[in-house]
Length: 338
Image (cartoon, rainbow, N blue to C red; front, side, top):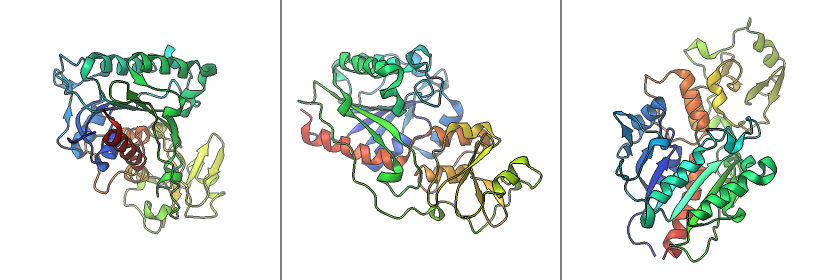
């Protein structure tokens, strides 16, 4: 049973999508670790009362983190959306041979450093391909390490969760969430994931104002731009989102937003397009945040350049999905923790 408020710690916290989702479930974040200075700037600009771990006045890296040196408070839940580029089907698929993929082992190291005060629950997030990549060896390795750290974990502790099907968000963003339960705190490893389909109508106009225009012309494709004609030829429904894929235009069906990715920060045609009252333009950074479920009023500080803003939005998680999962984790702890 659980009487005191639940506390979480965040690794790879980014701009706070995980922390906001857990906050919606009534779970406070005590500390957060993120080594990207610009992401920390956005996090601190919007989320107050959370200790951002630093080393010599700079954001700490998970690789350099230690429980003792950094005086990390023990937490009930540790969440970590560790880098997915090595495991994604669209990435280089180097898995644990890539330094970014090896950051998973740092999560396990930190958990072990807590010793008998380790988190009751670990929540991980990554590409669904981590389950099947390299003939399944990635998932076997991940499972082995989590179990060695003292947690219940198997395939049924994983679920692919997509905001399009579980929440009112119109973005299709299928991600793998993994929940490991401490064998010291639970009699079994059974975990019930959110699965109730959201039947509310998907309306892009709730997130994007197609009928108005922006004062900033830099978001617009001008007629001489080579992409302008390509997209214009495909524009039939002006309430759609359009994507460029090499030399093709991918038109998302009405009411659907494609998966927003960090590649948006690379510029060019990587940001999805819409047609508003003035013409063809890119989604704005704030529209991307809305489509990820960030709350109204969540903004970027002035010092964060536009490219970084797109990267931060694309690297984040869909906040309402995390909120649903956090609620399920909270119920598991409150009902079954020893």
